[in-house]
Length: 180
Image (tube, rainbow, N blue to C red):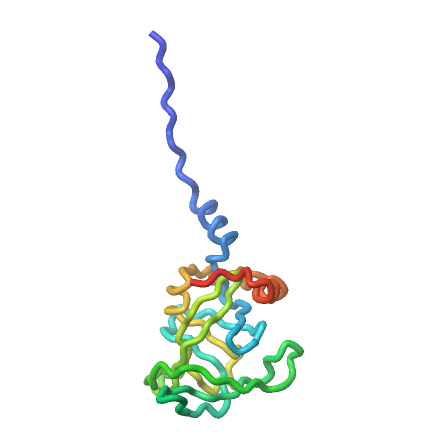
């Protein structure tokens, strides 16, 4: 009697699963290149922070305005044009005014807007609080609700896993950024 050997399924290793996630752009390092396509900001550096619930963006002079019975926030993004010079005046829909606790433990009322961010080849809608981050090392902080929306994992020992600046900018320009 001849016995045919059984084929056993080999489970993919954790490394091969992680490599596949990195290739698909779903793994972020502790810092990443972010684009703000709604404001024509091709690239800025962002700190990825799993301890922060809400993402935060360095904005100057935020103020609420009304247009057609809807609330918006008008603000200035300093130094984010493609050439790295000049300010960009922005307007975004106001989601709410929210009490946010900063890294130093102090709570403050901030405007929260809804806009798209581009990370690697992904475009996702996120909520971002506007704050004065001039003393911080990064103009943007990517919080965990944005990471959850994009289904990202974080590898804290690495940087810029989602793509080099040229890749992000090219994806934005060509329209190949996937929207989630």
